[in-house]
Length: 45
Image (cartoon, rainbow, N blue to C red; front, side):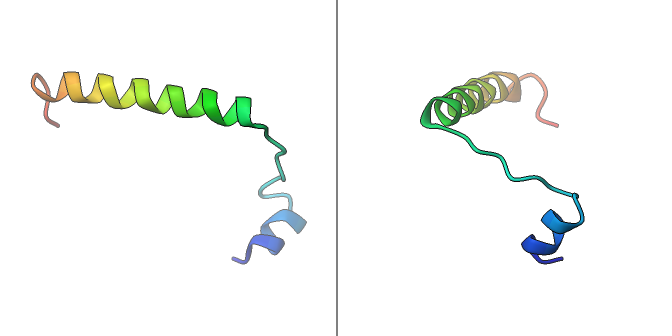
């Protein structure tokens, strides 16, 4: 489904973000990757 149609049908909404929001999300992703790497040795699945 095209992006514009998803917006028109309210299946997705436009979200305005700023650099602080993006940096916070990147830090969370980094933390999750570190945790996943640590857990890989114990539980590879």
